[in-house]
Image (cartoon, rainbow, N blue to C red):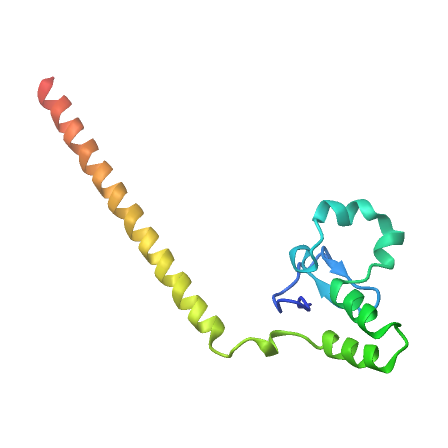
Length: 130
């Protein structure tokens, strides 16, 4: 299981993601700022030398890839994962999602119940007519 170097979420198991040739970091298309269609149109040669935005910025700031600062920054970038996300972030997110889903389901169930009652009334009315 590979994780996105930017957001820390799981990457697709079919290797359908962006890979940086400099840092070997793996990114979702959105996290890399690359449209999936553009990535596919690049071809293997261009994809094999693709440099992610952070590595490009580090390269600009340090002047060259061989500089010690760039290598240190690159190592830090390569180690990026969920470590920067607060511990309770996912628990809070899960609670919020659960609340939204529960509320939505409740509304839909009420709507279905109301429609079923209307249908029952219509059937009763038609039955009495005949």
